[in-house]
Image (cartoon, rainbow, N blue to C red; front, side, top):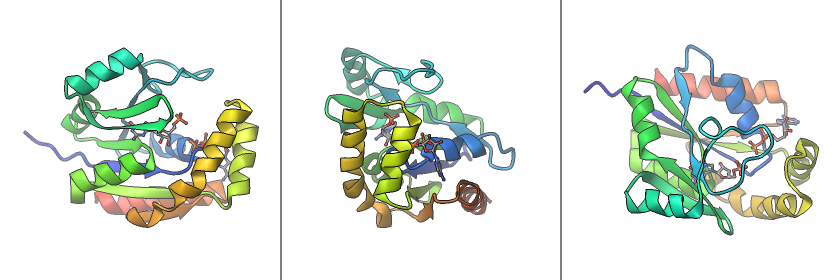
Length: 190
Ligand code: ADP
Ligand code: 5GP
C-alpha cells in the first residue's frame, strides 16, 4: 500500500503559540498537512468542538482506548488529564498520502520521534521568555488562574526537552516563526 505520509511533531510549553502557528500553516497546499486529532479527558474550552479540536473522552472511554490498543502514545499531561494520539488518526491521514501534524506534549513528542525515526520531524517551539508565556496565557483568557500557574510552572521543565527535538523555533515575532516552521516542514517533506 502506498504510504508516503510523514509525521510532523510540534511541541512547546502551553501558551507558546503552537496552535496559532499550526493554524497558520495547516491549509498550505505545499505542505499537505492534516491535523492529528488527539483524544483527551479534559473538558472542551469555549469554542472547541468534539471531533475537530480533540476527541473528548471520559476517563472510562480513554481507558478503553488504551485497552483496545488504539493509541500510539498517551500521557497524563496534567494531573488527572490524559491526552493521547489515536492510531486511527495517523492511519487515516497517512493513507491519503498526507502528512500528519501532531500537537503533543514533550514526552509524547520524544516517544513518537523514537517510534517513527526518519519518517518524523520533531519541532520544538520556544517562547521568548517564561514571563511572555504567562502574559500570553493570561491574554488568551481560556484558563482559570490556577491552570495558568500550573502551565507556567511546568514550562521550565518542558524546556529541558528542547535539545531532544530535531529543530527549534523561537516564537517571538509570529510571522517569522510561522515562516521558519513552514520552511522546515517543506525541507523535510521534499
Ligand atoms: P499554545 O497552543 O502553544 O498553547 P496558543 O497558540 O493558544 O498557544 O497561543 C497562546 C496565546 O498567545 C494566544 O492568545 C495567541 O494569540 C498568542 N500568541 C501566539 N503567538 C504570539 C506571538 N508571537 N506574540 C504574541 N502573542 C502570541
Ligand atoms: P491543551 O490542554 O492546552 O489543549 O494541551 C495541553 C498539552 O497536551 C499540550 O502540551 C499538548 O501539546 C498536549 N497534547 C495534546 N494532545 C496530545 C497527545 O495526543 N499526546 C500527548 N502526549 N500530548 C498531547
